[in-house]
Image 1 (cartoon, rainbow, N blue to C red):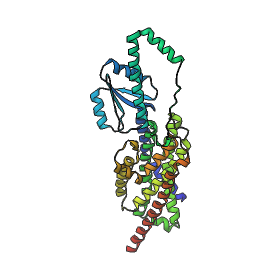
Image 2 (cartoon, rainbow, N blue to C red; image 1 turned 180 degrees about the vertical axis):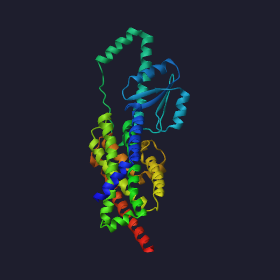
Image 3 (spheres, one colour; image 1 turned 120 degrees about the vertical axis):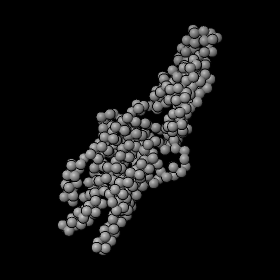
Image 4 (spheres, rainbow, N blue to C red; image 1 turned 90 degrees about the vertical axis):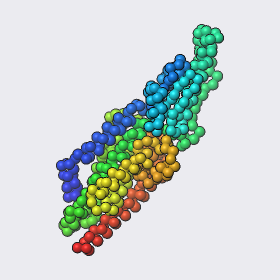
Length: 369
């Protein structure tokens, strides 16, 4: 097994392009997409040019948690048709329109803030028209000194609230997506060794099947895990991304996810004859898993029941949901036990089936000779 590790390491040293490229692409894509709104909810806003709409826009700019992007009404409508993740507002003199694919808690809260802005501005105008600016100043002082109510808002059921962190959505999504390629490419060395006869020569040299599989798979696993942990470390401790105190939990979930990807890769190479066939299947499946698993966009905005039903076949879904639960939702391991146990069970089954099919193919090949 030590010899396998040395051979794989020397090969990686000679050809490190894939590992470097996947790591760099993860860092760049996650940073560019995730930092576009600085952790705030990105909202596109279009006003009709009236005094009221401009005043409401200024009120919204004073609110924390929103990154406002001013565009025209035509641009807003076009963007709403093309980008299902977009949240937009069309402000008019006496009304407003919210463009959003989901009726999430964040969108409802935004709607309440807009209505409050319209109401406060209208009330201020009426007071000034009747009593002048001095009357409004007196009312402002009175409201600040004698507040009739102290309002505290919170969700009745936190488990049903949709929370969205653009930085973590991008970080987790691209990390899980690109490591899929890194691990699968390394697992393909098993298929290549079997095809070229290196596998059989090693067996003749008193290297057991167990050592061969453990050597190849452990190296592939560690390379994939190192890539994920490097990306997470850079974002948490270099770029300062807020992980809500769940960094080490995310690391454990990543370790289980890499195991699942490795097992799936073994299963894929057990069904094909060449490395090129395996690469094609992995490329297609990785993109599909990312789309239905919530790597590119949060599944809460997806309205197709068919697509939502398909999420259960995606390894990325289990890891993505687990990571968001222990960070954005500040959950414990108890809250993700179902996802974690599913990843472990599926990994064990795929690994056993994949190795069994590989060995049967090898036996048939030898018997035909």
